[in-house]
Length: 104
Image 1: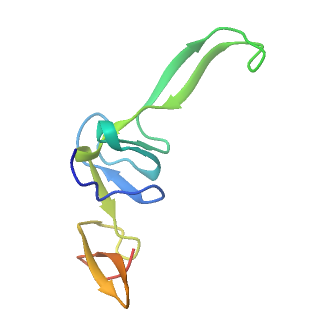
Image 2: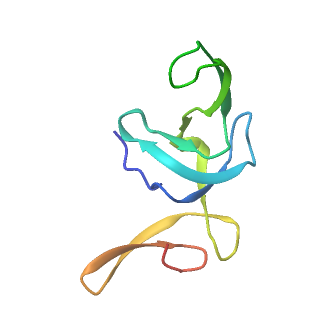
């Protein structure tokens, strides 16, 4: 398992694959599979049977996981992709953007 630099709530840009250039917020990170679910990216259609929860059934659109290697963190200040670093501020470790040197 690799060290993941992307966390839930981060804004990311897809840098490879069918959805290249799309941006969204990370909803969930699946650590054991090295994948993340990004809001509005990699949408798939799922056919569902009628049930008590969804009495009509039909086709439901939902986000599918995308591999972490295909995502790049977006710096909120410059709106460009950036790498992250970790530094100590006081007694806490904080993530920061290497382009703008701002705390994420």
